[in-house]
Every structure is written in structure tokens, then in C-alpha cells.
Amino acid sequence: MNSHEDVSKDVDQRISMVTGDPKRAIRVLSVPMIISMLLIMAYNLADSIWVAGLGPDALAALGFITPVFMIVIGLGNGLGAGATSLIARCIGAANKKKADNAALHSVILAVAVSMVLTLIVLIFLSNILLAMGAGETLGLAMQYGQVVFGGLIFLIFSSVASGILRAEGDVKRPMYAMAATAILNIILDPIFIYYFGWGIAGAAWATILSSGISCALMIYWMLFKETYISFSRSGFIADWDVVRAILMVGLPASAESFVMSFLGMFLNLILVITGGAAAVAVYTAGWRVVMMVMILPIGIGTAAITVAGAAFGARRYDNLKTTFKYASKLGFGIAMIVGLLLYILSGFIATIFAYSPQTAYLSPSIAAFLQVMFLFYIPIPLGITAGAVFQGVGKGLTSLILTVLRELAFIALFAYLFVFIFNFGSQGVWWGLVVGSAIGCAIAYTWANMFVNRLNRYSK
Image 1: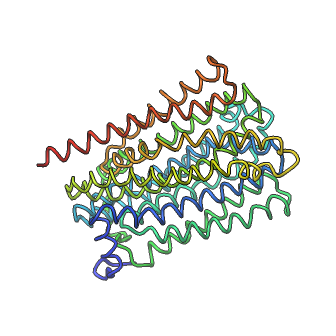
Image 2 (image 1 turned 90 degrees about the vertical axis):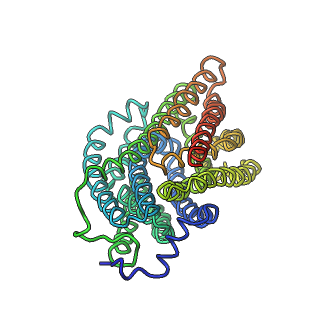
Image 3 (image 1 turned 60 degrees about the vertical axis):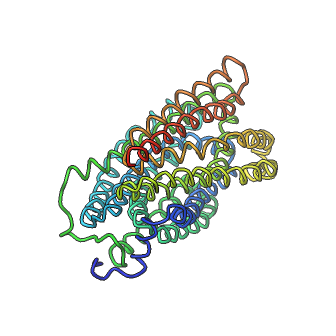
């Protein structure tokens, strides 16, 4: 087991970085985070690309599974955010004992939640998919879902373990674990899907096996390599206040993923009504690319959770304001540059998802979707950063409220209006995303800006 008495210079430097200059901390933390998330999306994208070769029904089945998958992944990410926020605040307040205890509580919560959630999802998966309109693609969706949801413990635990390491500024090791996971998944996908003839279930087995590798690596690092956090039985003191502090951020953050997944289900249902499986396939393929762009501001926002938490714990509200402003500008600038590049290359990117004779006809629609989504990238970094700052200071409920407003009060509403009232057809869903997110993110940014300014004003 590691010992705090032997904390290396490298660990001290990470802690100094997290509690020091916010701009530098965000840059240092966000790059490995972005790389890690790009790797996650890379193997999700690989799933879509390889599954697309099985035909539009298989790609649509993956689209129906995705919202449910994002709910359970969101729960893991939420618990990870709760762990990051509390541990970072403890580090900012120089309370190592509480930081250790928070980390141990987070691991126990991850295991317990995984076991319960696996049972619930497997029992009700068929009914959920039917309610979403899976219809003729139900069999294919179940083949994928039963495998991937049976291995939820790997997916959730890896998110929480990454959150614990991120809190102390260690983002490189989670990145290394994710690199190994992504590479293995990309290699195994065609072997399991086509060579072994497992079809869509092969993509799920590749995901679970590679995620298990990630978990094994992080367990090894946390237990046998030097970290700021000490994992020892003597450091664990059952404390409901610690559990509550984790869940005060973790549950709302998880609920945000549920809200976004619910929106995905709602949009899929509209797409089924207006364009059938082909419309869902277009959205599924195009949205994978959109999420690749979204990783950039999300990675910066995730880094901001750690930096904001440390600043808030140390009562350095000037650093908190700097974190908010800098992360917003950085995320906006990078998302715009990459979004413009994808706009220019939209036609070429669309052919990647329509390389088989069965899906070639989808290419023009996928390209059109990607071009409209350029407008979606403009406000999103502002909303993401606002939510991250609220999570960092422990106000997870506020972040959840902002997400509900954006996803349900605005995006869902405008998608419905554009599709059924203004008769835009399936493209109404695309424009609903653009207009709804713009309004929701503007509100979130304004709210966070007022909060940060008020803290700075009252502290003087």
C-alpha cells in the first residue's frame, strides 16, 4: 500500500498545480482528459463504423441502445464527478484524511451501484427498448444490450477510479488506461463481429473486455503505485456526511445524463415517426461525430471541476472566477475551430458511415446533419463550463436544473415545434438541437457568471 509519508515530488507537484494558477491547471489537466475522452469516442465510433457494415437495422439498433447506455455511463461519470469534487475541495482545504475517506467511499458506492443497476437494466431492457420504438430492431438491440449491460461494473468503476485520480491532478494514468482500452476494442471489433460471426453482439463483447482491462490497470495504480490518496482499510471511517457530499454532486450529475438520454429517446421516437429506421441511422451516425467535437469543451469542463473545487475549498474565489472565464473562452475557441473543419469535411466524413451498399444512400443526409450541427457547437462550451463550475463547488442540483432547462424545456420543445408545427420533417430535430441549446446555454452561462461574481463581491 502507498503511504503519505513517502509522497514523491511528482505528487507534490500535482497538488501544487491543482491549487495554483487556474489557467495553467486547466491546460495541464484538460489535454489528457480530452485525449482520454477522444479515445472513448474512438472505440464507440469504431462500434458504429463496424456495425454499419451489418446494415441500417443494426446501426439503428445501436442508436436505440445508446440513450440507455448513456444513462448508466452517466451514473458512473456522475459518481466520478462527485468523488472529484469532494476530494478536490478536501485537497484545497489541506484535509488529506477526509480526501482518503472520500475516495474509499466512492469505490464502495461504485461497486454497490453497479450490482443493483445491472440487475434492474437487464430485467427491464426489452420493455425500455419497445417503449422507445425499437420495433423490428428489438432483437438486434437486445443482442448488444444484454452483453454490454451485463458488464456495467467495469464501465462504472473505471469512471469513478478516473475521477479519484483526476482530483489530485493525475490525469495521465487514466489516459494510458483508456488508450489501452480503445486500441484493444478497435482491434477486437472486426474479429468478434465478422471473423467469429457474432454480429452486433461482438461489438458489445469487445467493449466489455476492453473496459475490464482499464479497470485492472487503475486498480493496480491506486493500490501499488504512489498517489496522494491512500487506499488502506485503516483510512476508512463510515460517514454518511461523506456519502451525502459525494451524492450531492454525483446524483444530479448522473441525473443530467438521464435527462440527456431521455431527450435522446424522445428525439429517436420523433425520428421513427417522421423517417423510420433510416432517420434514426442518420442521427446515430452524425451524433457520434458531434460528440467527438463535444469532447473538447467537455474535457475542459471536467478539468474545471477539479480546479474549481480546489479553489472553492481554499476559499480562493478569485481563482474560481478565473477558472470559469478561462475555461469558457478556451472551450469556445477550440470547439469553433474543430467545428468549422468538420463542416468543410462533412461530405467525406459521411461516407465513412455509408461505406456499404446497404447504407450508401444515407451519406447526403449525414453530411447535411453535420453541416447544421456547426451552429450547435457555438453556445455549448459556455453551458458545459457553467455546469462544471457548479459541480466543482458542490452545487450539483443547480447544474442539474440548468441541464433540465436546456434539454427538456428548450431542445425537446423546439424539436417538437419544428417537426410537427412547422413541418420541417426529420430535420426539425436538428434545428431543435441548435435553437434549444443556444437558449439553454445562454441562461446557464449568465447564472454561473452571477454566482461567481457574487462570491467575489462578498469575499472582499
